[in-house]
Length: 490
Image 1 (cartoon, rainbow, N blue to C red):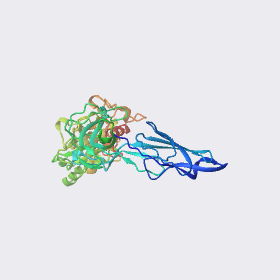
Image 2 (cartoon, rainbow, N blue to C red):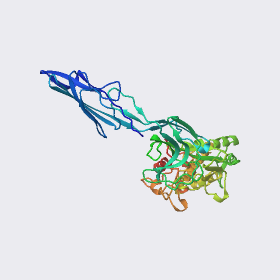
Image 3 (cartoon, rainbow, N blue to C red):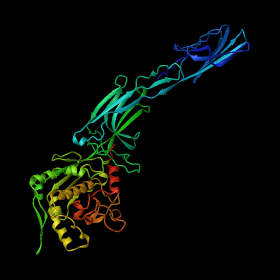
Image 4 (cartoon, one colour):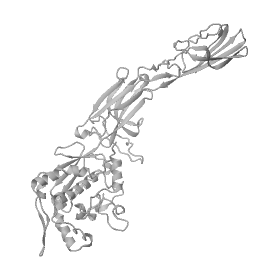
């Protein structure tokens, strides 16, 4: 590119400022300043009978040294800094006046801003990310006192990409989807795009920059959707169309939620309608009153809302009640029972750091109901762990109590699918009770068990806590911090 420049006009103007010119011991004030006519010359005058020595220099060297009576200096080009020096001698009074002006110009790179970009969109639910990129060309700005207009640089080009920030890769970015290439920003200063989430490259080989601790993931899977937690909209602009040069870059992080589908197996609601009794030789106690089929179905349909409120609001996860398969979403099945897992309230495939996009788990309502008589029997027999379980609880339990137990379990199992509580990364338990809170988390300082924690294993469960008769259950801070790291929100 040919560097543009702007000449200035200097005058010796009496009675302004800066320079002293002694005439018969009488001070007169003079100053030099840029003219406002913006011509390519330096003009001297305004004092009769004056000889001028003129010199103009820039960062390329001295230009046009001259001595004479004329008032015009030759044109010149090049350089971003101009120093003009004019020395005049008034021959009538043997006095001199000198004016020096330095005028420079500064280059401002082309820029890009991203506006209107959708945060928290889910490609898995058919949502699109609205992107608006606005480009501005580079320009030269002068330090003139008369507010000279900027000199616009033309010919810059840009592109718009969806990327992941990676260690290594293409200048720290791994491009996964090219939206617009070689945009002529002179003709197209603004570009809009609705991106639906599909990527067009294979598996990334560089780990994504994921946390200050250096814990990184490799994403996305080949030809799939962008997995949580986020991607970057990246716009780049090259000055003068030189794509071999370093571009100006603007990026915007867009957060993608993890979607978990709640799938209720047809007929499951029936399990909630039947009353439950504890019966022995001397006792017949109604433990659960049962309900209508409509009430049971309505309660189950509200589970997605009940689960969502138990997660920290900073965790970017959505629960959707749907019978339709959703790509790259976890699925939690709500079933009545499974003879292969008769002692379990629920189960789920563990998924360290949410690495796999579509894991599954199941909650067994029949098992939650079926364990109620056993828990009541242990309470009556005074087994130490169950002492006080049903104290101050009005029997029979109602549908809302059982739904509380179901909601706690349907919150527990999806957390396994997010990687909680991983023995590899989070210090979780190992063995038959792996992926749960360790004793350092659930044992109180006085040696008692904290039954309020959702990610405890079944060995720390008690029915009165599961139905929220002692208060609502929640996540330990370590669980919350992990999920906020895993699935951040803007």
